[in-house]
Length: 164
Image 1 (cartoon, rainbow, N blue to C red):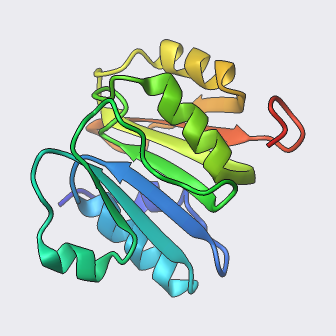
Image 2 (image 1 turned 90 degrees about the horizontal axis):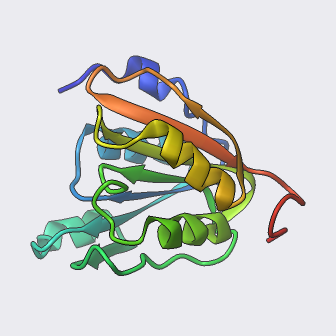
Image 3 (image 1 turned 180 degrees about the vertical axis):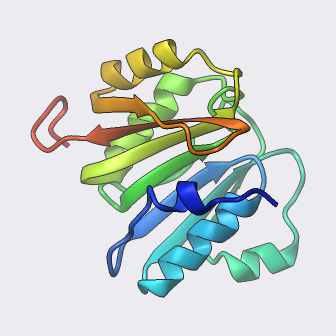
């Protein structure tokens, strides 16, 4: 298991916050988000993209678990329902990256963040930052807190871009 202490410092959920992780598998970051959100009586939702059917105990643990089998389909999210959307090892695999970024933008509350975590070297960071800007996210930054992963974080700004 990786040391996530530096990674954990990026996230400081407030009481009642809601995080959505969109991922290909449950890993140590999933468990971390579940833990820190529970401490503030928040809500942690999970969308898993893969061809395997999740086990019943996953549906029991994560009440709002979405299972998506195709990497061309969107995940489901209500407008302004989340304080953080985390794409975990998914962004490089999804066939329509712009679509999922626009969906994340709509799903985020104003001034909320989108986070992209990918294995080191799998994505062109400059290109990802361009895509984030095109989809109306601002202040995109790369943060080196995981030795084996690239992490890019950007913000949905109030009254910028789409205004949603």
